[in-house]
Image (cartoon, rainbow over all chains, first blue to last red; front, side):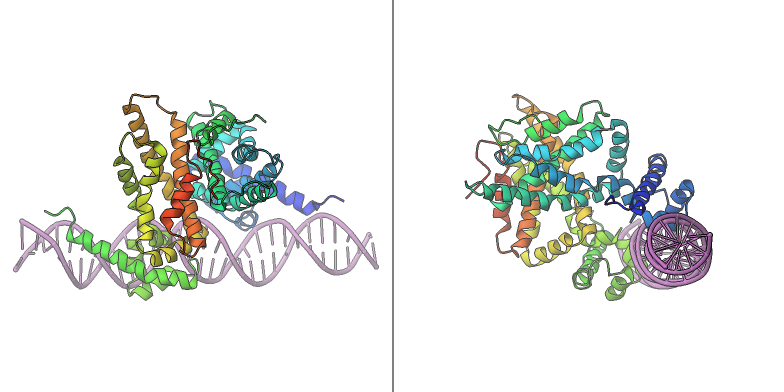
Amino acid sequence: MSGLSTRAISRAAVRRELAAVALPRFVDVGFDAVTFEDLAGAAGVSRSTFLRYFASKEDVVLHVFDPLGEQLAAALAARPQAEDDWTALRRAVDPAVQLIAADPEAGLTLLRLVWSTPALWARLHEKHGSWRPPLVDLLVRRSTASAAKAPALLAVRTRVMAALGCLMVAFDAWIESGGAQPLEALTDDAFAALAPSGAQPSRR
Amino acid sequence: MSGLSTRAISRAAVRRELAAVALPRFVDVGFDAVTFEDLAGAAGVSRSTFLRYFASKEDVVLHVFDPLGEQLAAALAARPQAEDDWTALRRAVDPAVQLIAADPEAGLTLLRLVWSTPALWARLHEKHGSWRPPLVDLLVRRSTASAAKAPALLAVRTRVMAALGCLMVAFDAWIESGGAQPLEALTDDAFAALAPSGAQPSRR
DNA sequence: TCCTCATGTGGAACTGAGTGTCAGGTTACG
DNA sequence: CGTAACCTGACACTCAGTTCCACATGAGGA
């Protein structure tokens, strides 16, 4: 049958439902002021059950970013070997841009919440930390495959770090513009500000 | 009379002492496994008192980074206006490098602890978030003062973000080398990997 | 159809972080 | 020397997160 058991499907659906109930509360009352008891009551389940679906209060908000680690790596792996690192990284970050830009209304609410809550902002950066090593590995493998000069590991790490930094700056500017500026363009601009000279950013 | 009251001096001294007692415990037992009760007992004060000196457990470790926000801004402000942004940022980051490199033994222990504890790592990045805006302001003011073309705000933000990213990557590599490589050189290398002018980031 | 076993649920008890308050002691300073 | 500011330890409290248990439920096999 399918790789996903009916249990797993049900679990994912409940998760989504609980998060959907919780988000407006966080936005209205403030993340820190909301307790698990509130959330459980609003969702019609017990505190125990709510806690069984999310490892922490931050997770209720940030679980939507979880698949991004693998998605960024997959997007990077899909880029042609000939492409320069910086352009490849720009494209690797597309799933993250898409995740938000696909539903700008919801995305703006979510990012505003995360950006205005230190605990959430910090946890998001914790996730970044786990996204980086796979991206570095992919770039290193790429460059050692193509016989030419192998760039220093430190340089690759720096570029990966910078790429995620560009993404954050773009989010930052997008929130500030109230979603008026297209997120893709802001991301392009951020990457362009650090582009190695002469490299022409290629459109998708 | 003096800008610092004797109370303030005493308070700072006690803070240092309590942190000095706490750090080895964190390293030996693990940050999460240590409780405020442990720490208070080891330091010979009550839990109440210990908690009055630190806002959170993370703060016991990270309070050493607190002055850095102003120090980075001051270092940047001290750079000549003619200097390009990227070089100025490299120099602005020197106080952070010095803070660690001044006592490599202690610095290595501290960074290892922070890097191996997600909660600490996340909180450190939370601090970065507050360091960035002043640096951006300074760079913007500088470039509007010199009559030439004013770079886009987004570009400035991106470069500031990238500069702090470089610092983190350098710390990362320094920890990995066990403190063998000089931290200043690693920082130089990280900045070089993103240097704007045609210099290809790949070194050999 | 009925059994049973794995899983979901609610409830209770527990640890530990962090906050607030209070009484009593100590220190700075006029 | 007196007093006002501050420091301290003790206690009570809220809430996040963990663990354990008893019970309900639903899916699949006999």
